[in-house]
Structure formats: structure tokens, C-alpha cells
Amino acid sequence: MDYDALFRSQLDALRDEGNYRVFAELERSRGAYPRAKNHGAGADEVTVWCSNDYLGMGQNAEVLGAMHTALDECGAGAGGTRNISGTNHAHVLLERELADLHGKDAALLFTSGYVSNWAALSTLGARLPGCTILSDAYNHASMIEGIRHARCDKRIWAHNDPRDLERKLADLDPDAPKVVAFESVYSMDGDIAPIAEICDVAERYGAMTYLDEVHAAGLYGQRGGGIAEREGLMDRVTLIEGTLGKAFGVVGGYITGSAELVDFIRSFASGFIFTTALPPSVAAGATASIKLLKGEEGVALRARQRAQVEKLRAALDRAGIPHLDNPSHIVPVMVKDPVKCKMLSDILMEDWGIYVQPINYPTVPKGTERLRFTPSPLHTDADIEHLVDALHALWSQCALARAVA
Ligand code: PMP
Image 1 (cartoon, rainbow, N blue to C red):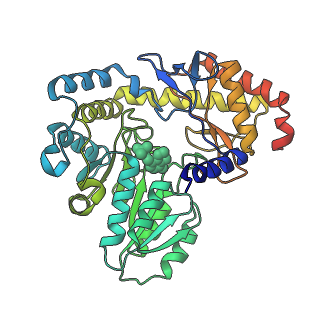
Image 2: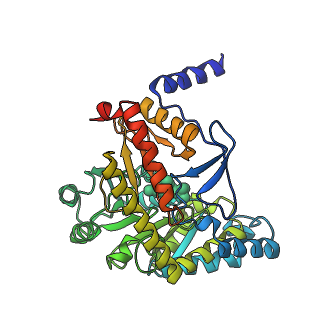
């Protein structure tokens, strides 16, 4: 059997659809964000416009300092799984910090946000007898995989639609456990869930709520506790999940909730139990990042980010470039064609020194391909002007205006 031929045929099909992924090979340089060296085709130095290091904390001097100190004091790795010799003091401090951030009793770390969703949802669905998980139709792949792995009853409710959620809940056994799983900021469209209404419905039917704040923690709320903090709803959401890899600039994932809930996941989730803990340096860096974003520096960074987001939106409007209008920090420019989307991204990289990854199927539905811009507090007004000039020039050149009309 020629296995390589089997692999090739599927990869060729991806290429034919325009959905084959090519990664930009960048070198992030300390203190230079959003600038990065480019080792691939195109300009040698690029301005990064699509990073999820939303506030530039991955380059923050205090975060880096905390990581260096922990590396020097504690060494490279954690030394084991959390259960067998891998629980370092730095993990425990970080979990306290996270519980405090989201106003919960306790928190639990995972190696990524993906793993935290997968592990927590699969454990809840599999371990709660007769459980049904009710999942928003636009939930992230990590939540979908967790729910699939739980092998429990599941219902998909229409995106951000509490009325449809209510219809689905009304069909279920009132005495059986139910988990309503959803996100606060949806990363591809940048829209925000009506959390209060979802909590109202869930409470009426005795369901627990599971909220992914991956694209909101660090970015919203007075202390960076996410949309639930901003809207005064942290105590109404049963479980808040997040990542340390986006606004906090490092890597790792977590859940927060009541002491019993966190102890339950800690005790039964294979994705937590059977894997090496995060390095102490990562935990120390994340703790420093969260502390900074809880304080005045966080308030200032969030305000500056919002200002740059609004400037980009206004400049796109002036240039007549179609983008989704949403109440978050995510600015999707809709191209609606995978080949044109990739072509635009390539030309921006090669001729303009602008890096924005094309977002194609299966990350978004076919026909909704887009360039997704994430302005940070470190993007200057001149960066925004340069980006919009480039898009304006390309939009007419490529006759994209006609194609996407
Ligand atoms: N949830 C959502 C909504 C996400 O968008 C992502 C990653 N893009 C994750 C979870 C996974 O987080 P991480 O990158 O830390 O694995």
C-alpha cells in the first residue's frame, strides 16, 4: 500500500479547494511587537496583524522577567504530571490568581485552552449520570471534541439564541443534569453572547453554565475578568474557562468554578491527570501577566487597544472596505472566496510587509472566508493607515469589490 499517495491525494484536494494551509515562518523579536522578522516569502520584516497576543503581553518586560527568574530558580520542566511530583508552587499561585480573576473558589490549569475545554466537557458529560450538553452552534472545535468524547446526549442550539436554547431545554427531563456550553466573544465574527439571558434560561431549567472566555479574559472587565466580569455575571456562570495563550501572552488553559466542581474535574479528567504539568516559568509568566492586567496597566492597555480597534474600523469605512461590525476587538474583513483570500494575504505579505493569515474553511464556513485583524495597543496610527492604504489599493486592483458585492 502506498500510504504517501493516500496522504497526497487528500492534500491535493485541499489545495484544489484553496484551503491548504501555509504557515508564515516568523521570528518574534523581544520588544519589537507587532513587528516580526519573516523567514518565508515576502518582506524581511512584517507588521503582524492577526496575532492573538492581543495586548502584546508576550513581549512585556515584567512577564519576561518573571519567566527568567523562575527559569533560573526552578529549571526547565515541571518534573512530572500534577499528580506525580509535577505540582510546583508556581502552579498553585497561578491557580489562586485565576480563581480570584473570575471571582470563583478555585481554578485548575491545563496545558492549553484546547485541552481544558476537551477535558472538562468530556468529563462533565461522561461522569454526570444522564447528562445532556447543550452547545451553541458556533462553539470552538475544542468544545465540540470534548462533547463528542463525552458520548452523552447533546443538543445544538442556534448561535446566540436564548429562545432556541429554551426550546431545547424544555424538551429535557427536568431532573437530569444539563450543561449549557457557550463562548463570550466568538473569535471569527467577534460577536458577543447575551450571557445574562442565557443564564436566565439555564437557571429556569436547572442547567449549569459553561462559558469559554478565551477571547475575552484579560481584555474586558475592570480587572480583565472577561465579559462576565464586565456585565457583573461571574457568580451566575457555573464554570468559566480560559487560556493563558492569548491576552495573557504565554501558553496554557484553565477552568474556574466552585471548589467541588474544580475538584471533580481534577479527580476525573484524563486530559488533566495523565500529562506533564506546564513549566514553572510559564506559570510564573502567566501570573505576572494576570496581575498586571488586573491593575492600572491593564486598564490603560485595554483602553488603547479599543481606541486602535475603533480607528481601524473608521478607516476601513472611509475606504469602503466591508467588515463585520461587532462590539469586540476583532475586525473581520470579508473576502468570501478562499483563493482570493489567500491571494490578498500573499500580496500583503510580499508587497506591503503586512502579515494577516487568510481564514478559510473549516475554521469558518465556506463562502465566508475572511482576513481577521486584531489591532493591539502597540499598533500605531501609521500602522493602521498603511494597512488601510494597502487594502484599498488591492481591493480595486483585484476587482474584489465586484467579487464580494
Ligand atoms: N476556545 C476558543 C474559543 C478558541 O478560539 C481557542 C483557540 N483559538 C481555544 C479555546 C483553545 O485555546 P488554546 O489556544 O489555549 O489551546
